[in-house]
Image: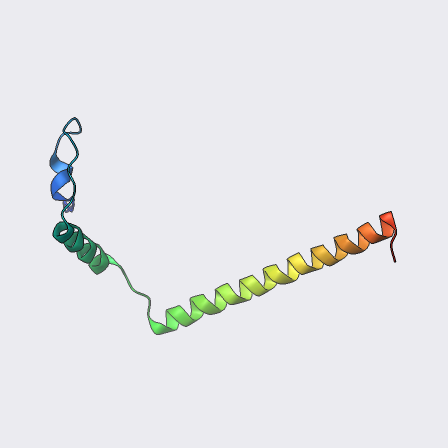
Length: 81
């Protein structure tokens, strides 16, 4: 069963002039959306953070390695001190 969660302005035909959402309505909609969020547990958060940090370190190593190899190749091809 689907639940209609559209805002009050969603029911208006598209040809009507657009109206501004009041700050109170906007706040209520934000709170309702935040209630739908599935927040990660502390364990999940630590796992995600570790995965991201390891991935970033691997990418830094790859970019550094390519930069060093290409730099060495340019010096070998074009000469240098």
